[in-house]
Image (cartoon, rainbow, N blue to C red; front, side, top):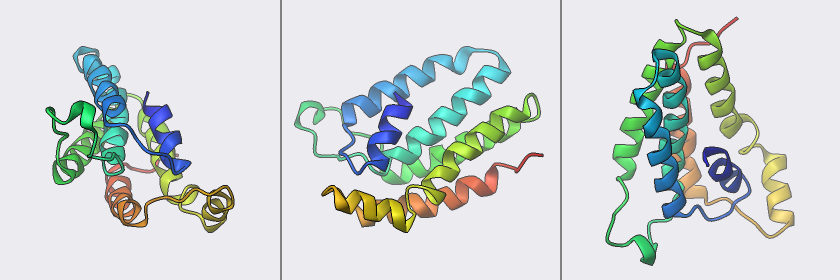
Length: 148
């Protein structure tokens, strides 16, 4: 579900709050696993919290169940980044994989050529929401050590 949301975001599509909620709930089920599994889970959660910045809040189906705030999502993303980074001591691939995933937001999906391709098919990423994503990506990457 995280990958589906991520792909939709990159393509300038609307992110459904109900799908976002299900993805978070699904990921949270794995927080009871081994330390390595928990580190991987925090990689998924940090991306989901990052994606929360792009979820449209006006969803009449789930209006009785408000989403976490943008500010809370930012805090949770950074906490999950720290936990993912700590898990890198158990398996460096955990952090390396998460870092590559998050770098895509910065290097691919915000690239001028990507933006031009979206515009050519009548799609556009929300500039204000993506500015928030850009700022949070920088903070997340600061918490995820480079491996090699």
